[in-house]
Image (cartoon, rainbow, N blue to C red; front, top):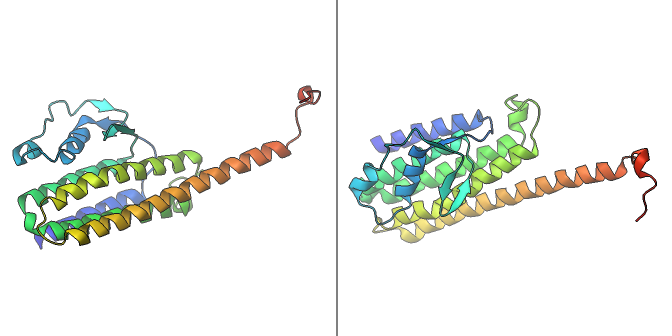
Length: 219
């Protein structure tokens, strides 16, 4: 129960951070890349997982690398990575609670997906004055990148949990599959929104009078 309560507190902290997210990409400490590396290494032993190399954790990079792909990230994603690491560490110590950890992790991903949709697609970040100048294509693109990062990372989280769960594996897989579908639908909505914004710009441009210097041109 103690771990459940701790997970709930940390999930609430992520939710609060996401509701105040500035939606600007940041430089990333190699500390977070180290977390990703050990989470995604199914062969690493417990000692290596806990004591991953942090000697160069002050080095900064523009991206997090997952499965050979580069992702620019926001503050909320870095905090999410820390929580991913904590979840998997608990599963390694206490594999008997793997199903419960999976449920908490899936719920966390659902919350991230829901709030990011409210903040950007739903323009809540604009209405709350966090993005007072409005939601731009940049903010949509950053959200899309964040969701793409999550979708790329989730299979590694799922495998870390499944390989330590002696029961409920079909249910665990089903829960992860469901949340991935939700996130993918969210990404599609973002692409549709970006496409509409681009179409509006083109349409506005086409309806504007040409400068005098161009009116003599012929096809």
